[in-house]
Image (cartoon, rainbow, N blue to C red; front, side):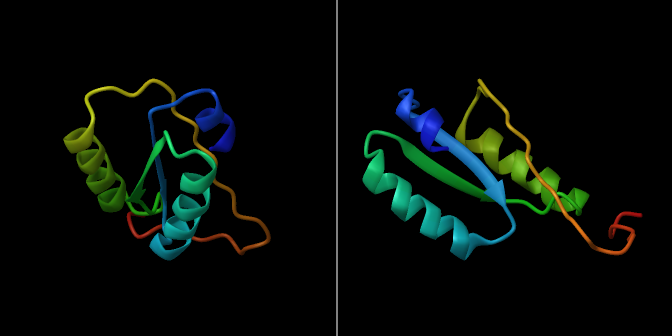
Length: 85
């Protein structure tokens, strides 16, 4: 996010499952990039209801999305099925 903020982004939305960790990231980045607003939207991509809720929250706060970066990875876990099957 720092690279995007350093390019002059006014507002950066990001998502994840852990709100506490997100607050820590916002605190750190806000000091380094005070002109950028960082907005966390909680979202668990393994749960479609969570994804839909995150989309609603985003749309309630913005009417445009210029760049989307999706980065998620899980390693060394047994095969599993999401809540949605």
